[in-house]
Image (cartoon, rainbow, N blue to C red; front, top):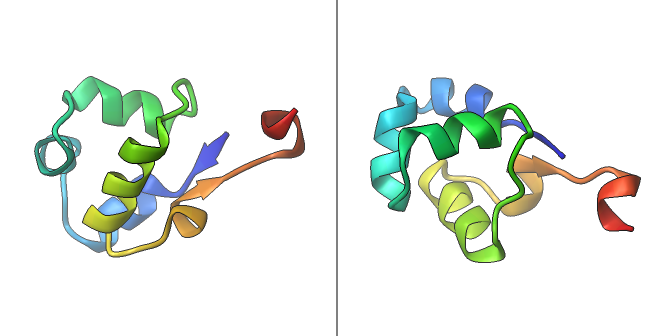
Length: 68
């Protein structure tokens, strides 16, 4: 899965640590999300999107193989 977290974080002037604190996870979790190495729960995806002032669909780009 691809994400726009890094781009949206920069737009909101947030560091990985800032975003992690806002959503209640470790900075490494945000790093893994940004690199597409971790698929978040729906709850975490919602928290990230809300913290970035976006929707889940704007933040996370689901690819066909992700849905199978």
